[in-house]
Amino acid sequence: MNTQFFDNAAGYLPDVCFERLPDVGIMLGSGWGEALRMDNVLVRIAYADIPGLGASTVRGHTGEFVLYEREGRRIAAWCGRRHYYEGVGWEPVVLPIEILRRMGCGTLLLTNAAGGINPALKPGDFVIIRDHINLVGANPLIGPHNPEWGERFPDMTEVYHRHLSELLHASANRLGLRAMDGVYAYTSGPCYETPAEIQAYKAQGADVVGMSTVPEAVFAKACGMKIAGISLVSNLAAGISRRTLNHEEVVAAGESAKPLMSAFIEDFLGRL
Image (tube, rainbow, N blue to C red):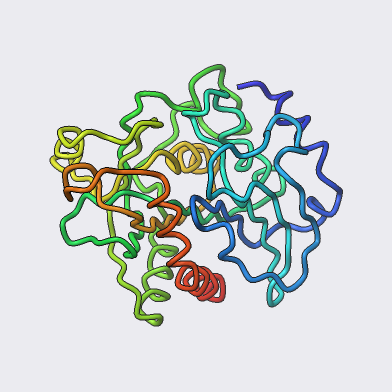
């Protein structure tokens, strides 16, 4: 990846972004963009204004970076993400994580909307990501090795930090949310999967499927961050139900679950 690309983006951010280490970084996926409660906003920047990042092209992604404080914690939030299927390369996809790394952030919460594969799941449920399967056959770390991003061959035995996952479960239990551990299958998109593909992913052990999260998780893990992940089940995957799939259903599920998503993140942040 092009290091100058990241230099240009980091150089655009005001000095306040680097004066104190964030307690946590958050990546908000489809429908999650308004899930945060902010006491004191220090920085708010549209993605379109950050060199190289570009405006979010997907409905349900707010498309802004917000640095704020909440009950004494400093939180760096990326409200929306860029995706591999947008065809812009890996740099915009992992740029938020690289910026967090340069800010000194050591803890990352990734969120997304996903299709349910496990028959125990229904729309509106949450899945705390235990592990993932990269079905894309591509990786943002491919290319010349940059020692600042960790080892050439980073270990991925435990991408999602066990203690952080336990905190998520504690939050879900306190709030009475339907949440289970699960494996997230990553596909490139932008097509939804076929029923045959979903059955293949199920046989591989996947509980949910989506088009994001894994590139950021791989890059963040290589850089030494502690990672937690949450999927909102926005719909049942192809062939699990008889309904056809569309993005409006994903957006509607996020809108409906917004109060629960907000409470979930808020309680989790209070446990860090």
